[in-house]
Length: 245
Image (tube, rainbow, N blue to C red; front, top):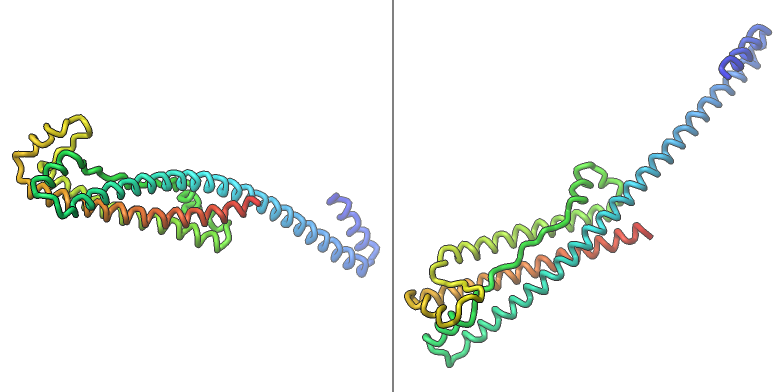
């Protein structure tokens, strides 16, 4: 093909047909330009196709991660709401004006274990981290990027708040652990009382009541922050599902 065009140019020049030669040269340049444009267009189509496939993979993986988070978080909120009811029942019992000091001490030792905390969330954020670290997050629209980054901010805020409150609770529990027997159900009430009888009941009651209050605050803040995460997660999921339509 190249030899064919060279032959045409040579014939025009040898026959001294300068005008036709320039017209031919311009036409040849246009053909080259058109060929380049077509090649660029094909390349753009290929790049867009690859980007669309990459985006689709991220969408599917993000949906999978966030659906797991939603199920996990909602279940943990339910569990912690049940814990709040237990703590509230203790507070209601303590507020009974007919209770004597001895009744209160003996009853708490026998009937109420400090239930601990179940407030540690683990987020499925591997896809998010890869999306951000690779820079591929820019294949999404600005609105979605904003909502996804907001979700990450809510998650980090929940983890930070819960960790601080949890550490505060367990620090107090650790400092006063000799005041309290955590039976886990294997000690009978009479044995529990005897094991605790050597301790100052007033110290035990102060420790118990303070622990319950810190525990309730920790759980309530956990539920509050986790519900914000759930709400934002569902918002992001809604945007992701629109991407699949």
